[in-house]
Length: 393
Ligand code: PLP
Image (tube, rainbow, N blue to C red):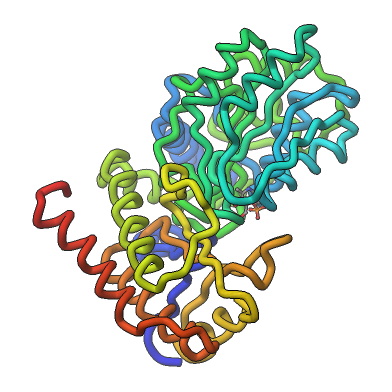
């Protein structure tokens, strides 16, 4: 099909030309003199992105799940108790990684249509008077439902309960797109992947680690080899790695961090907010519900659109792919066939969002949904125009 492919799944996201060019180079000697300046610049850039002054940065040639496993094996022992929440496919997967390492996981079942209520965390921690929970596991932005958890409120809830549990956060689909304040929110470990807000291909697991978690890693006895972050941190201090790193991705990451710096994090967050508002205005014009029922918690990085009973959401995805070269995200887990997801994160601008909305309208119509064709595009255009003309951007 001629023209460009619209990769509007909620990650991997579009990789900008500039990043592709930065990776399009001969592979370097990963034990030579070229690598350390790249690594040092990356560490500083990632700290800024996590909004951490001196968080330790560890990189693994892995996907986000690898970073999750690293967070678990370095901070938790078999038999430790943790508090986790099943509010979507990824929060459940987070709990499952801990469970596979014999951690005792109290996984609270929630409806898959909102973030984790901070009050619930406060109440659970208050009830744990003996402080048996070692950690609370939270997904910042649940990519399967499009619901964001308010981490500032989670921190307040944990402080309010006076509980010392660590706060371990999955920031896979929020980092570099949503405001993420590692230091201010007292996060102990945050984990992410390269393929979403960082605008890179998949392949890098990224962690930011606080002082307490670093100490904890020295004490835990959980067997770990590849995902032991201690040798990684030690080598990264010298600009190297204990394994063969994904060298070309590192060049791409350096470029991505430079781009984020040039745009400015605040503007990056504002752009994601604006594009999300435009997409949701379109969905309202289609008279379809979004999976996240709490407007204040609707994600700025993706929107899960609920299709009417009797329609298979995968039919919309198939029509989008077949006829319009547009990829939309599938419904995951219990939402399979019920929702499709529009990714609006990473390298993305107004016109790309409008084209995505237009393609989605066409695909829905082909798949048998009765939506007013053009209404979504008009609604999204109005939001974008209003913001521009009111001077709010
Ligand atoms: N956590 C969240 C919130 C995600 O969105 C994803 C992937 O989409 C993951 C974890 C798993 O990451 P990966 O697929 O890179 O292993």
